[in-house]
Length: 355
Image (tube, rainbow, N blue to C red; front, top):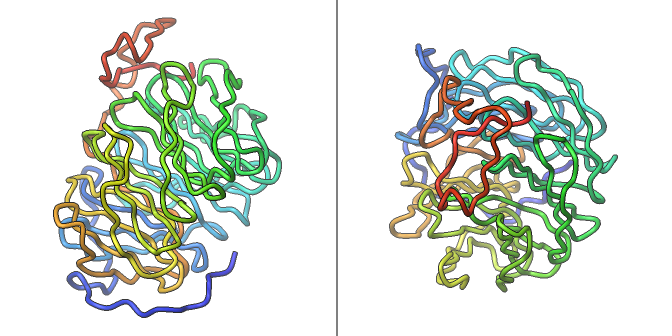
């Protein structure tokens, strides 16, 4: 994968940006952001308190996807050209395992319970399931054509955006089988669930829309027009706002989740793809493939306040979890218990997943 030609120059920096080696802490860092630099084969670590790059971690070839474990202790990176997943210890900031996977891994996410990692294979139209205790692939799930991004929700389900078939596959983490296929817009690219667990949002790059899928029914309940070529999505912690990167015009569309309408557009220069929110909710971070940087946006003013240089062609980006869930809380639900989103009233359950 090559970076797009450089067309713009970004200005104004947020704090010191020279990467430094951070001292390892006794516990995993919480207010941090991880950036997958696809052309430098590294992951940059940004301190979201100071907006400094504090580490650059070598991983596999062409890293494009990144996910964080519920307890923030490990970071998982999809290396699309080495057909591997790198496992990073968030405390020591070192790769502790390299997991071979099938084909070209792109999208990646960790199950809500933290016991599984799900990785899309865009070439073989499958999703690999990794056991996080053994760091081995334990299942391969056929999905739609060209599965790109993926999101794991609390209710023992994983949603996969299939670019080539204009669908979203819904996988049960109990059976590792597709239990529903949802027709969305053209070329679904980005996908993310709301923290309240009620909806999944899909950025349809080919139809310039965002599909809203109800997790109760696995049906599209709204289709939201946005600017051209929506790419990636993130949802605020209170599930009130949905942020979508768009390429034409360059920016971030802000959607009111109550009305399903675009209420603002944040102008951001460059070829931006990945987007995430800092764990404390202060900043939006948007990767820029052209300028090898991450733009920083204030969630209060919705203005770009600076940029942070990272590695070459930053693609995927993911913040640590706002409220870490230790492993002792992963198995709160009795074995065999099933709970629907409707029964939970929108609250996240402590579920046992995939076991």
